[in-house]
Image (cartoon, rainbow, N blue to C red):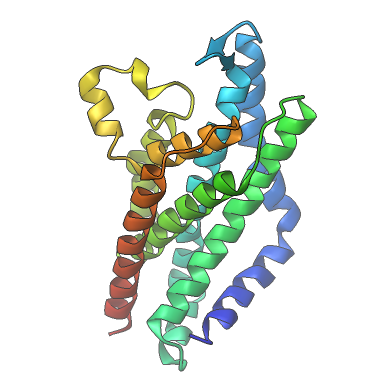
Length: 244
């Protein structure tokens, strides 16, 4: 397991060289959504008895943790296809679990950065929410889940085109349909059944309840932990197969 520090440290060093571009990139999407949806709809619109902007911010945080956690797949692919870094890890005395742990922790780190930007924007725009233990726990579990998924899929795709298809057909629909911008309860019943199987739905539910000062149900945390563990094991298996 000690090898995970080398994997993680390498990713942090690369991030350090482009930190300002990364922060700017992480800021654009939530800023547009806050201005377009939060202020476009106005303070008169309420959802579940709270201003729409207060409803929107936790959903954006859940979506950002998903996107930033999953985005490490593209960086892993670049390292595999162009820099041949994964080949160096294959011959190095580093176990698969160390490699997966280092990459997943880097995905969680990026998610923490993205969500911190959103919470900072919310404060600047005058929206005061409760970013407590339950909020950050749900966020980390969501990032852990999607970072593990990213490592698994990064070992399976054969090109960047395949990676783009996964983002377009998996991540983007989840970001818009998982209770991020609107209550899931407003959807038709058959759609609600489908959305309940999406991890982002549970993450948004838990983070929103915590941010609004309510006691979240434990079910979302159990679901996120269980799926995350399964995907982490899948990542170990995929990395192991890729090393063979």
